[in-house]
Length: 177
Image (tube, rainbow, N blue to C red):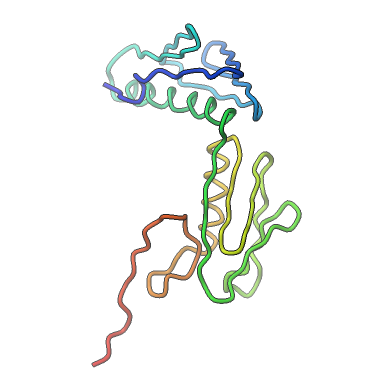
């Protein structure tokens, strides 16, 4: 039984949910989002609560059940609260900044790395901290992952870009005889 798919979604006040077949459109104080859920999942909207059911118990149906609920919940949370990811930069001489619609990273390469900021995403940099925020969870996560992938943390000195709170596995260097 899908534990995620069985949880109902409360629709907060000020949020409007429209659905046709398997297409959801959610409008709230922070903006508007839409998604398409798998066709094998049925849903009901009653008294500001959305519930999801599936037709059978095959593995694909079970995974679609949880996926559909998670997608719609991300829309509702996105238009009310939004999402954010925090990154941290470690390394002598490494720096980052926002120039226009790009994030420019100087992280030890012979050239600066330029990453375009997608529409609807804000990147706020304060010293060694960077906050990627927006209403679309997928776009926020993808932008944060692109920034992190430009210079992943190396295990010997711990230099690079990592999420705040991420555990960095360190290795011992050369041992002297």
